[in-house]
Length: 74
Image 1 (cartoon, rainbow, N blue to C red):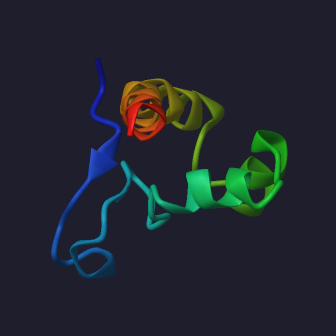
Image 2: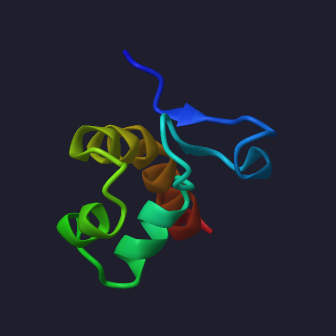
């Protein structure tokens, strides 16, 4: 599997970004949470590929599910 995220102090001060871009990975879930679509995100950030975005969402899903499950149990 290709690396999805780059953390380099010389790129965006070490903020995690999509590999090969300067787009922080945090932008994608924030964009979607604000009602944007994946298609719109990709149009606004064309250096991020659809494959990168989908792979990131797939990788992040277990953490989101665990967080929601933990919140429901509390």
